[in-house]
Amino acid sequence: MALNIKIDFGNKYELSYITEDLKFGVFESKLFDGTSMRLGIKISSDPHPLIPDVYNLAFGPLDTDFQINDWQKIRHQDHSRVFSTIVFAALSFLDTNKGKFIGIDGSDTTRAYMYYRCILSNLEHLGSIFDIFGVNYYVRVLRNGIEDISDIVALPRQILPGQIIPSSQLYNYFIFTVKSAAKTNS
Image (cartoon, rainbow, N blue to C red; front, top):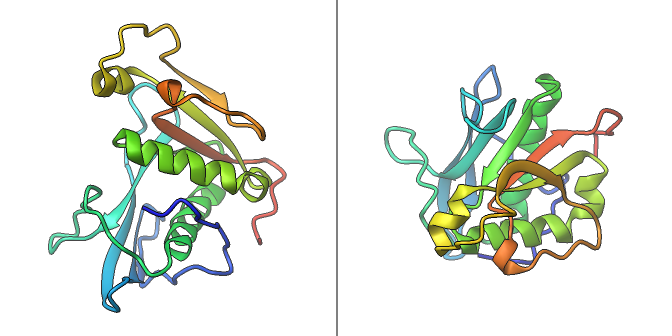
């Protein structure tokens, strides 16, 4: 996965399909080999079991039953454009669902690190639109066999400029909500 992702809502794919409630959308991404792949963005119907008002966002290639395979590794021509599309879809949902949050699960340590780096490298722009939080909870214990769980609670901690989190304490879940005075026409 690319780590030099730049979120830019002027450089996003158009959704070819989106549900009225903004919880499911489809777009085509151009791949490194010149082909295209149909990707889906899905926001869960039910909130996170540990964190109130947080709805999980999943994204990835769609199978023939419109199910998202978020484990498949894909070489996109433009990772920035893909992630800008996903973040814009989340923003659209949050703009119409005030007081709700979007959560993104770093389903493994590599992805959690990639999401964290993407957030940090885009924090000036994203921070003008969203309040962004990281959460550590039991998943990191299961993945890494950590015995000291004193820092692992389902308590969001705001991600701020200049923060450096050691990889051993890396967040495994990231939460976004729209700032009350955010300008979303970026």
